Amino acid sequence: MNTENTNNVVEWAPFTLAEGVTEQQLLEAAETIQSRFLALQPGYIRRELLKKSEQEWVDLVYWSSQEDAEQAFQKAAESEACGGYFSLMVMPENPETAVLHLQQMKQWR
Image (cartoon, rainbow, N blue to C red; front, side, top):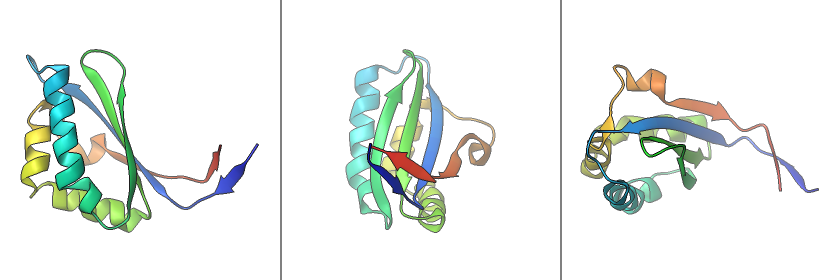
C-alpha cells in the first residue's frame, strides 16, 4: 500500500440538473468549462464529474492550495464558460455554502 501526505484542497460541489437538461448537454458544458476555465487556473490539479442519479451530480476538483481554490471560485462568477455550465443547474440560494473546500490530509493508492 502506497500512502502519501498532501496539502491539496478538494472542492466538493454537488448540484442538481435543471428540469429538461440532458446528460449530453451537461457533458458538453463540462468539457467547455474544463478547457476554457478550470485547466487555465493557477493551482488546478484535476477534476472528476460524479453521477449519483439522473439529476444529482458532483464536481470534484483538486487544487494545490486553499487560496487557488478560492480565487478560482471568485473568478468563476465572471466566466462565460462557467455561466453556461451553471445555467444547466438548479442553483442554491447561497452557492458559497453549497461548495465545500476540504483539505486533503492523506491519500492511498
